[in-house]
Amino acid sequence: MKCAKIILLLAFSLPIYASGQDPVFTQTMTNPMYFNPAFAGMQQNLRSGIDHRIQWSSKYGVFLSTAFSADIGLPKINSGIGIIFTNDIHGYDINTLTTNTFTAVYSYEFNLTNDNYLRLGAGVSFSAGIAALVGIVGTIPPWDMEPIPQNPNLSIGTLYYRNNFYIGISAYNIVPNLNPIPPNDGYLPTYSRLNLQSGGFLNFGKIMINPHVDLLKQGNYEYIMPGLNLSLSAITIGASYRYAFEYISSLNMLLGVKIWNLKLCYSYDYTLSGSTYPGYSGNNYVKATAGSHELSIVFQFNKPHDTSSKPMIGNLRNAF
Image 1 (cartoon, rainbow, N blue to C red):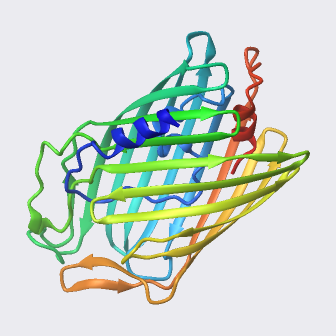
Image 2 (image 1 turned 90 degrees about the vertical axis):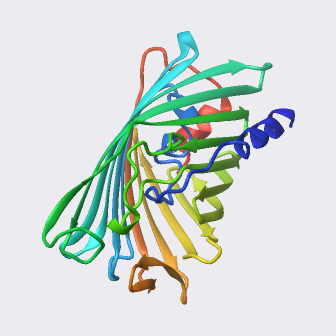
C-alpha cells in the first residue's frame, strides 16, 4: 500500500505542458507499453502485436490510429526492452493531419519482497507529422503539405505488482516542444499525457475475472474508464465505460479469442448520444454519434528462458 501511495504522489507532481492529443485506444492490454513503459518485457516471452482503431468513421474528423509493438523480457538482468510504432491520421477527405511516432522502451524490475515487485520504465520517441490542408486554416496556402516541427520526447513510468494485483502511473511527452508552432496554423504540438492504470485477477479454474480501471489526463481532455473482463478458457468478453466529462463518453464492448500463441480481439465503442468534441475555427464543436471499431492481433512466442512461474505474468498473457 505504501508503494501505491508513492506512485500516486509521483504522478501528480509531474509537469503538464499545453499541447494536442495522442491516439486513444480502448484495448489497454493489447499494447500495454503504450500506457506505461514499465510493462516492457514484463511477460518475458517475445510478443508482438498490432492494434487498429477507426474512430467516428461516419463523421467529420475521423481518426484512424494504428499501433505496432514488440517487446521481450531479459530476466537474467531483470530488464525488458520494446519498440512501438504508431500512425495516427485525423481528417476527412483531402484534409488530413498525419503523425508517425517511433518509441524505444526499456524497463527494470526490483524485487521488493518475495511477492512484491516494482518496475521502472522509460521510453524515447521520435515523431514526424504532416498536415495536408486545402487552405482552410490560418496561414497554410491552398493545397499545401506542411511538415509539423517535432522534437525527440521522453516517457517514464512505474508499476507495482504482486500475484494478482497491479497499479501503475506514467507520463508521456514530457519534453515541451522546442519548435513552437504558430497558433493560427490550425494545429498544436502534443500535450503531456498522464496515465494511471490498475487491475486485478480472480481465478476460478478455467474462469478468470479481470476488473480494471484506466485514468488519462492530456491537456483539457481527461477520462476515467472502469471495466470488467470475463474469460472462460480461450474466450473473453468484456465491457468498460469511458467517462470523459464534457467530451465524448462511450460504452465499450469487447470480444477476445486465444488460439495457441495468437490472441485476436475486437471491441466496439458505442458513443453516447449528445456528445461533442472540439473542432476547428468556425466549427467549434462537432456532433459525434458514430461508434468506434478496434481490432488487434497479438503473437506470443515462447523462449528457452521463459520459465517464470509468477501468477501475474500468466494473468497478463491471458488478458485482453
